[in-house]
Image (cartoon, rainbow, N blue to C red; front, side):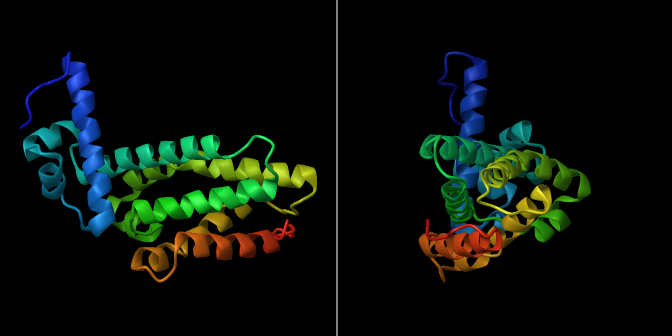
Length: 201
């Protein structure tokens, strides 16, 4: 186990937790989250399994923490990369591209597989962790409706459908059958046409 190098125990714990989640990120890119074991994570992070279990009691807790981190990274990237005066269509394109890039950077099972693996309670917690991304998409749709660019019957339902369309590209992305750029173009074109926006704008 690595020696304590931080100034305080609290800092050491934060550094160790960060190292664990970085290990999950690396392993997910190589193997996919569903194939990763707690032993794999401990080895990749350079700690013992006992230490790992002191931070995360099981894989579900580890996956929830990792999902929360990835979600925050997405929110920060979206806010950093997108000008405040961007059109609703451009905001939607940016959302789609970042979502697809995240799917490729951090491969994970689909919602149905995760639900079966985690159980209903943990899966509900997972849904709560990714809720901020849904809210970003709802805000984009609301702005498009307000500007007259989008025609939407039910904003919340439409947001779920768009996320499902993005998720449909998960397997082609991970398998290398399509690039992020191409998938983003296809999904954005499909969604913007469904919303009756000018996809060439």
